[in-house]
Amino acid sequence: MIYGNINNEFFETHCALLPGPLALALRYLKNNDMVKAEPGVYDLQLGKSECILQVLDLKTSDRATLRPEVHRKYIDVQFLADGGPEEAAFWNDDYSLDVDEDLLSTKRDILFYKNSDNTKEGRIYLTPGTFACYFPWDVHVPAIQTGCESKPIRKIVIKVPLEDCYR
Image (tube, rainbow, N blue to C red; front, side, top):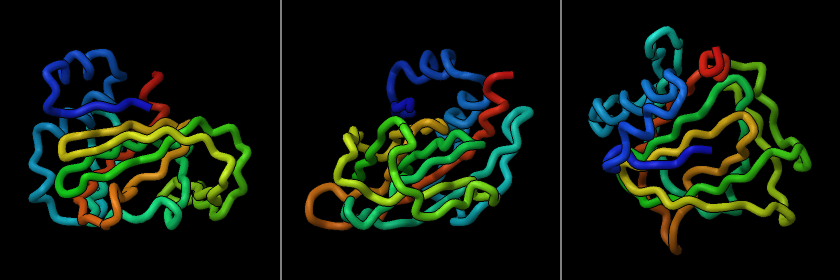
């Protein structure tokens, strides 16, 4: 997992250390006003990479109501454009959780696990401008509410093909 903020003074250094397609995705988020984007799912060409852009208006929820997820063909670049704050849980996929729903063979490329009380998850705190890049080995649970109240969020997800990052 990679975590940062597009407004950080080291943003360009951060991008320079990443594979080209990931850097292009982060720069796209910095250079486009995603708050004004129309909600939906779009094809997005970044350099030679055919990515998927999702513009989502969601509400944060209690952690217990959210399912852990993982992707295998894409790196999930998640960006909080507006609202929140939110938390996200993460941990290394050791394949110990039971599968709840497997949609890996669909365009969504997503597998949901069942929650488990035995998981040792880390947490990150996201405010507008914050991003997290989840790799296929990173189980993650986005859109967790902070405190006792659900909050609206504008979440942007760019799905970057994993294979484009190691060519």
